Image (cartoon, rainbow, N blue to C red):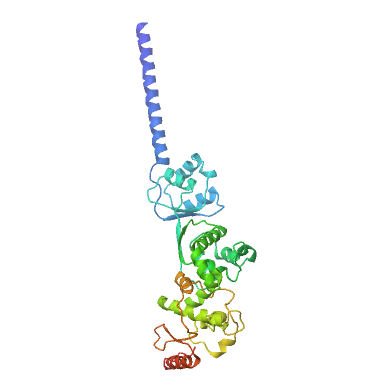
Length: 351
């Protein structure tokens, strides 16, 4: 009887031991499985960035991760995403990937919207269409969405602009922002920078020459197109301001080129001077309705801090240095012009 009880007790102990071993193995397996799915390296490094578009759902994100080979094990990513409730926490953005990231680290980054900003640096782009196309390569909105706002009289009026002069609001610089910045937020950011730039001191200088900030930028765009060298900008600005004060037409060649929409023109011929356009300053007195290019900050400051002189005429120097000969009277100006035209002829520049 005692032997039977001992045998029975031994069997029970073995059963307990076996169950403990099985439980231990199961827990170990679960732990390893948990580790592999959450903490083991899974991001491949095939892509440097993951772009999640505004309005994208989890399925779209998952398919993108799978199709672009962003993770080695898509099943473990899906399991981890489901268990971390990422399916209902998708946020758009541009996310920097690092090879060897775990599912947990990747999902935490995506779910928190912890994206890396982009740098949008633009300088002296000629047309607002070019500007919109350039910006669209840096952030999510396409160029059509940006142009739509720039051309919307109702929208730009909120900021005190018109579709003709709104381009003066964008100051060349380097800006950091999130990739998924909307067109409206991009516009708001640019306007905030514009307001910051136009300090009370700059506004006072503009008022002293009877120009608004927008008019200063329009004139600066002509100065920028005319002067190839920054050190000559104040002199060019002073000349144009003299013409404005006297009620003379600006007669600026870059405005004619803009009106003709042919930026290959190197020689402004007489036939171009009659182009019927509000931007043709050979036909119309005063400033054109908008800028002919995105003016640089140097050009804007050159208008505000112009060089005082009696010059009202200028002509490109015949040495093609990019500088100008200035004159206070027609006779000297015509002599300067003849030398430059002769230099053009000698180089067979007809257009």
